[in-house]
Length: 405
Image 1: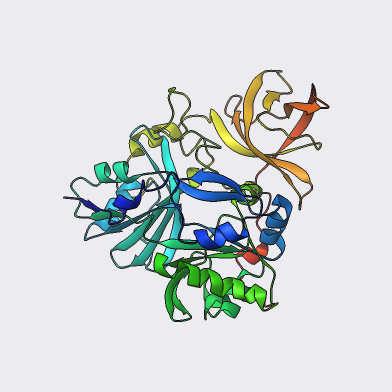
Image 2: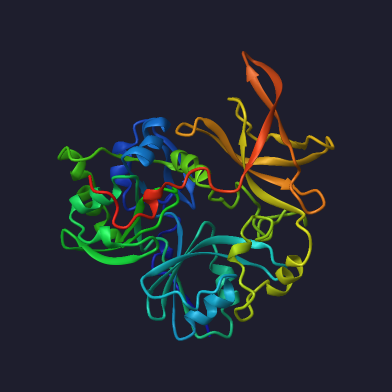
């Protein structure tokens, strides 16, 4: 029978917002004191300026606290079989010290969440997700010989992202980072501290994530920022605001922003399947049964009804929450979900939920944009172009070894 433990559960509600193990340094560097809640943690939205943090990701090196991300340790004789039953992707071939992106659905084939599975060692996995998933994991694990532990508070994590991220980690004292391929895991030391380094990220750029015991969190932070103090590289902490900009450029979806999860949707037609999110490539019907397989198999044989697509929007007016229309028929066909003016691409890029016409995308899509100018609301129309590829995935994100600086 499944078991669940959480040695840190008694500390969850000691404060209105949970402090991160890095909080002392974050408080020092958050100049504008712009805070928000991320999974109950006190998290910076912006440290200094949004522009400087954005360009830290795209031009130099950025550091972001990942500790609030939901993390679950799944171990036991049936760990791999259980996870393969849970997610739509076949993870039976996922080797130790490798990471993969996954989604999981309910019985109706609607997405509950997306995340990453870290195969730490034989029979030992970590599942990272955007939202709380412990209840679903425990229910799904009935009959499996697995242990499920929520370790969100037990693991401190930093995302080190940007073109000089490998050089920064090397200068900080972590050896062998340049040998890690995308989605590799490496066990290293930093000034005598055991850390795990994964070549993963949410930016579409070169980047790594560093995982450590919370007791050594400040020492890890200081070792990284010492590189900046020595004048070797420019390093900036970033908040969720800059992360949202770069993840939209990279085409990464966010539950709660780009789609309603099956658990949170109130109306029957507001949840989404992998096909409706453009994630059909994550569904593998050749593997053994997984939750939602029957419903997804039936959906795969029908014409596409709707899909989350990448749209570039002409002009400089923000298409936030804009309605989308089919230019041919004049009917409303969708809504912009997430959007950002891309400083590096010099255009509006967005993720939009679009209805298909007879199984195909409309030939021309226009956005109806409302904007305010000197306290007066105005309306304009902007042509939209569908992008088959992410707006920004730089070649350096997969280059091994990365360029030296």
